[in-house]
Image 1 (tube, rainbow, N blue to C red):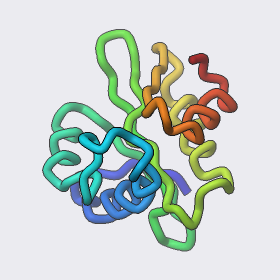
Image 2 (cartoon, rainbow, N blue to C red; image 1 turned 90 degrees about the horizontal axis):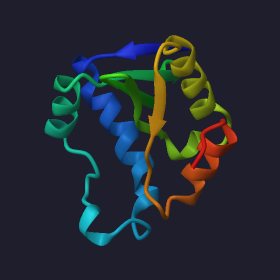
Image 3 (cartoon, rainbow, N blue to C red; image 1 turned 45 degrees about the vertical axis):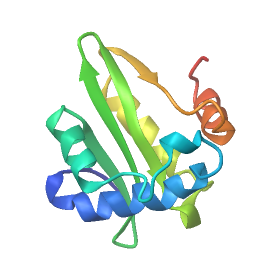
Image 4 (tube, rainbow, N blue to C red; image 1 turned 90 degrees about the vertical axis):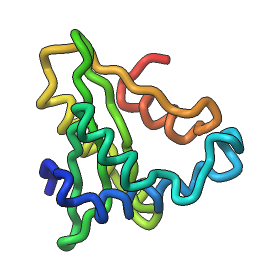
Length: 130
């Protein structure tokens, strides 16, 4: 089930982001890595800057998140993460398809780390162009 999440869900969203982001350790530049990867205040700032977060629940547990942020005539995919134990089973694809469906009116863009080859392959597989 996919639903929109709010600031009241910060602990659950952060759990997913920081669990999934552990995959970046040693892959992204060292000066861009921190533990935890995202701090609570950073996520609060994202909400305050218009990021809307959506979550995928399985067995009443949040296992994946993905956000969107509208900026002028484009919409950005932001903070797309799935718990490590749930990766590769379609949760990210379901979230992305949901966001594509609710965002038919503007161009959709995504950015990721250059060395996060698994993420780049995912977005290309979903129809994005490098």
